[in-house]
Image 1 (tube, each protein chain N blue to C red):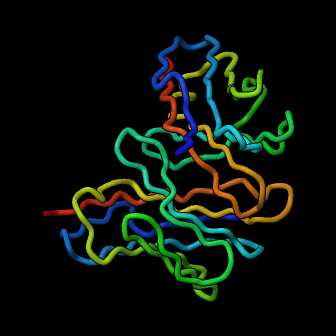
Image 2: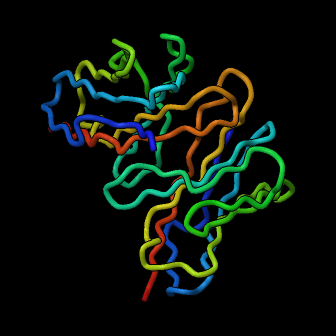
Length: 116
Length: 114
């Protein structure tokens, strides 16, 4: 069964400092991996996704993530976050094949605070 | 840019009452989903729907839940007899064809059961 873990339920960084949000996954087949962001009282917005090909994926708002198969990780980074990046970030996985290929499994989320 | 819409944004109901949550997926999408997020918890898959039938459902999606695509645009989630523990944010999502296509999420309906 697929699963996602996110180390750190809350991360706080200074504005302009590198932010790193950790995600590890478990999947029996090559996974599709996603990062979604949820701003307060809003829905889920896709930041970026990895399906196949280049393992370093660039997304919106300056975020990027790197798929590392051996480490089963898909950590999210942003070199210089702004206060407007404060939100809940969810890592998610789907297996991309089979009858249940399109079910998305979410991690527990990491709340990001950016200190001015 | 096309987006998934959901109504109402907030629904308050009494325990035991029926509620219908409505979603309008992106117009050319063929796959539809419901997820829920209990306050402070992660987003959980409820059900997927394709070609007018359920493709997959989770253990959460018991007999009190049902989904329907009553016309060419709406996708609904019905909870027949609400319980306190049904209080959550419910997200609708849709995607087009292709295994790599992204699920686009609506803004959610916050359901409060009193």
